[in-house]
Image 1 (cartoon, rainbow, N blue to C red):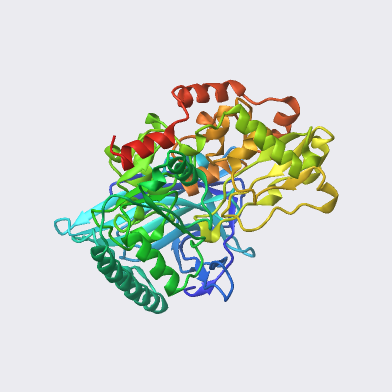
Image 2 (cartoon, rainbow, N blue to C red):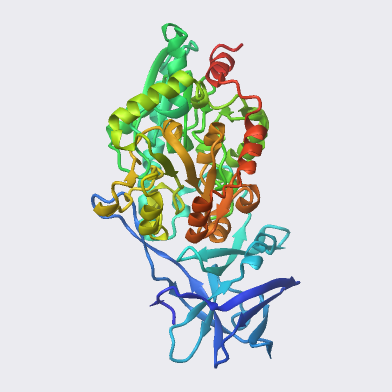
Length: 570
């Protein structure tokens, strides 16, 4: 059936429940409550991506995999207690006749006569163990290897299918070099990569010339972001503090502020940005900045990552190594940071994993944007201005809904708004509460709010600084985001709406268990969320404990510490 397009249909009716190794024999079981004539196969799986049309921000995934199927037969079929258990033993050296599995990704498929083929799901208990099931079979003195690893994949964000990755590998003796053209698998892809590599080569050459011609006296600073066309968050607070201390007279400050990730920028725009980079002594960034994966900064320039988030659950950077969207071992901008700022000492280990940096590169001095966060005058001033702009909200209790995005990155970010029942939310709010959306900036689609609900459900996603909204928030609802980190200082309840928790943990990845470590009540269903709101069931003691563990030494002077340590060498 090679070359056939089918819909990816995963079902829990047939579920992989066990998987283990016996030398070259891969054992796994499939269980079902259905008693019928069924055959099984290993299906080669590939998702297709449609190139973006003119005016579109990113490419779209075509939800039809292309496959070829290799029939497999169970060694045993056991029927008991209303279940049918199929036990398979696969000799990986002779899966297809006398051959190994080809390079690629494979799923277990069930075929029932008269029905569309099913992709077998995988039990959550097994899915959490899959990282430990991988095998590397080396041969020819280690110059080659056959690797088989296991992961999960989900179409609907709930049902998981088992993904078996089978690849023959050659030792990469020059792993510290990116091979842009070889990374592409199609002719069009290689053509695009040749064009890309030519542009990178010119960028590097241009940077090298301008950098060598630029005198460096330790007095040039640039604040840079590629995610917003304005200065915000930690960058803004450091910039403001430099000026408040009168240090802008001693330093020449420039800015590179673009909304560039996932969008096309002109050659002139890139040249202008690289010219600015080449002239700097210090560059402060607040997020992922791809250009530093393409050019190697001179030793005379120090790159400082002041990461915009405190602590969340979702895996980012090298915490996701081996999963979809992982950075490369070399050529990642994260590897170029001379300094990285964390909110506390206990976060150094977390971000050492995220950025792939040794712990000595970190300064655990706190988040600059929390400087003065609890200042009563600042809070009062914000409330005055906010309620002047939104008089209809004064006297209302704000429920701030601030989840992170779904998807592997900015280009394909989304949120499933169908998981919320607006009628139930509207009825709950009554005359006491207002539900406020503050969506992640990567999520382009705005929350759909019917006109009849807009007096109690509103969207403030365009509001620049979520921290300011905490001043007027009564209850925060988030998920895997780091939004709860700063909110913990407010000594108010947090709820975690994690409708796709197990799927998210197993596909997107987290660096710690949400259920065990969330500083507030975790609600896996919308019904649980509404019950928690109605009963004021917040598990608030977990929030208080988190605040004590993370902010016991909070002094609100992070920006000064960053300036003194990095710029003034104190």
